Image (cartoon, rainbow, N blue to C red; front, side, top):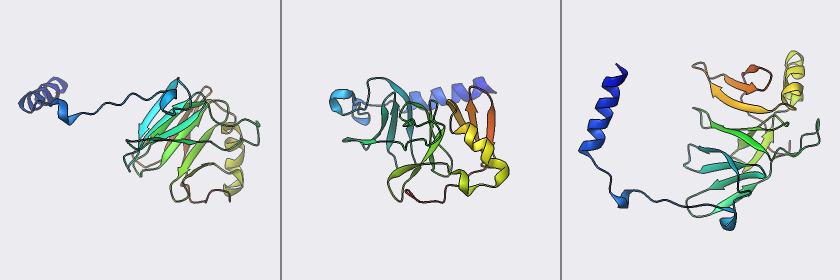
Amino acid sequence: MLLTCLLGTAQVAAAQPATADEFRFEHLSVDEGLAHSDAMAVAQDRAGFIWVGTNHGLDRYDGYELKPYALPINPLSGLSANRIQVLYADRTGQLWVGTERAGLSFYDADHDCFRRLAAQLLLPSARRLLRQLAQADVSSLATDPLGRLWVGTSRAYLSWPWSPTTKCGA
């Protein structure tokens, strides 16, 4: 079955060869404004922006220029969450950012900023888990068919039924 799919894909690709005009490659580096030379994660969101997570921040590329973003300071660890481990755009279009030792943040497109998950917005039973997550190395992110966010850390995988509805600075 897999071989059939691969062969079918190869036949379609062979029938419609790409030309050099169809592709545009850009080399992005610190000289072009990238936050750091080590790009650790890359994702494309629903709006078409390319997000690049580095060891010193997060940048959004619109095809012409880079826009830097600083993630919020984690009040539990005192760290700015700017050592990006993983980026993930879920099926609803939400962009999630997993960081080193500072947990998980999400992009608030309405306010063009990033937010941390806030413990005060959760049920008391989930607050302890969120405090642990806020200090974890987030290494992987995925959603299941029910839309639940799964967060992989160095210690465990956590299911997170989160819907970011709060505003930046709230």
